[in-house]
Length: 363
Image (cartoon, rainbow, N blue to C red; front, side, top):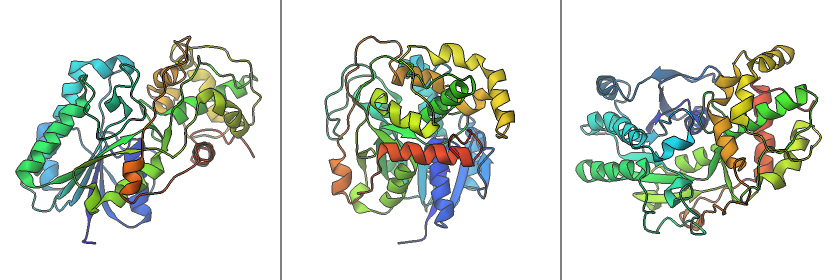
């Protein structure tokens, strides 16, 4: 394999962070770029870049990104409140502009050969209507407006002009760690559990009937992205990726209660986004008691309580349709790693305890 220099854009997010940790541990030359460097990731140098600043992107292309062979675009713009923005034209155009601002000045690069882009299950219209099961990469695009299509078309055009190849990933719900993240279920569930436990309350499922879904461990996604570099089967292709099993939040609740060493209460519908953001003082007491890093609750959770309300179907009274992806194409391309989703939960909540982001629930 030829010498690689990887640039990770959006490196402080859930996926970008997992990638940078992997590259650090495997001694891969990698440049980490994000608008806001993380406060709790050691051994990695981060550089600040505002993707809406075209001049800053030009300067970055000629300096930090010089010699880059592989670029992973993991940046994302979401509007406050999260869900409504998914159909918002301004949000779509902002995400397209960010990608163009970065790639336009790189068209003259003689080193860059491959770009990795992230999409997700919304590519199958799961947020618009019941999706066809399973979601298969070769199916025609679902006919709804989405910045995924804008970015994908732009990337295809760049490839025709420059010769760059690309890989597009469609992960299921991603589980990993990042501060300020808009869609971080580990932060939402972990802080909910900590606040309930500190108040002497049971670990009560707060939603409605939950859908059958799948997960993807951020570390597993990072491994797949790294594996795909310089693999012919991944060039100019799109891949779904999941842990390899399926789950429902309600059916996982007892396993999560065991992780948190808590009793399960009777299900009680509540909207975390409407009540738990007001628990900053309670969270400060937990931080002090457990000697956690002094992050505010909003820093840990970001907009993820809104995401949790959607994932738990807190607004619904009937079971949502399933959202399931085929991963046959990925396995046929040579990537076979998998992880049990319950084991993934245990791994991440243990790690978040070690990082002093959440309390250590079991001693």
